[in-house]
Image (cartoon, rainbow, N blue to C red; front, top):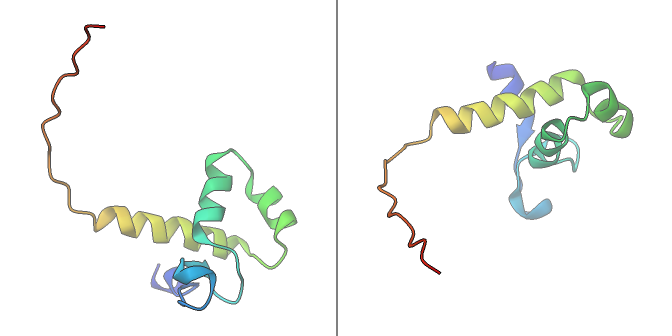
Length: 84
């Protein structure tokens, strides 16, 4: 998986430093949003011919790593007043 993560980079001079697939201007966020919307890998590769299957997998691996390293702190949520 380390090899996959190396496909993701960030440069403050490119798209404000958002994580991108190295060598492209395609953000990890864009790839994930397409996958979330149900766009198939085949369609993504057709629309972004500079990407590879490994690049898409790298975006997923990057997101998984962010979630895996996330610290979670339970917060009590107050009940909302339902009176109009």
